[in-house]
Structure formats: C-alpha cells, structure tokens
Image (cartoon, rainbow, N blue to C red; front, top):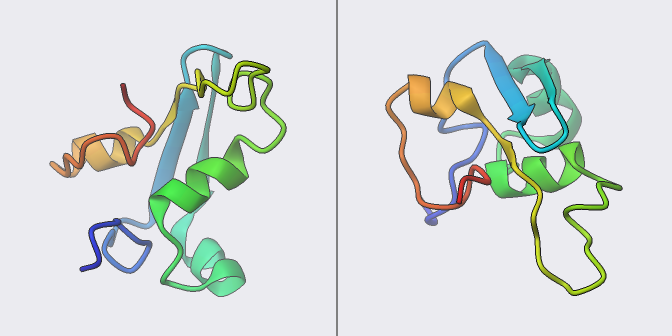
Length: 87
C-alpha cells in the first residue's frame, strides 16, 4: 500500500462520512464510488471531493479547519493519522 488508504483497501459496503463543524453526516455506497472514481481513489481525495466548496477547508489563511472524517474507518479498526480528516 502506498501509505494512503484507498477504496480498494476498505471492504465495507457503506462509507460513513461526517463533519462535526458543519453538523453534516451521510452514507456513500462504496461500489458506486468505485464505479465512478476507481478503486484507487484515496480517502484523502474522497474527503476533498465530499467537502468541495467548504469554506472551512479553503480558509483565507490557508489553514484547513474542515472536520470531514469517515467514522466507518474507526469502526473497522483502521487508524491512519490524518487521512480521515481527524485532527
């Protein structure tokens, strides 16, 4: 593995996503994401796609304050630093 977790590495059917800062949450179908973006899509890139346009991610000062993360990774016992958006 290249160091970045990809859709290929996560075998769950549903990818849960949340942002505590924006009080948003949802579920994404893994198979549909693989079909649309390929199994090599990293969760870091998925995070950027999910949070596209978020003013917290694209702050004027250049600091990423977006809290988008994937609880399904924690539930699966996958802990990988900041890739899931956790800080």
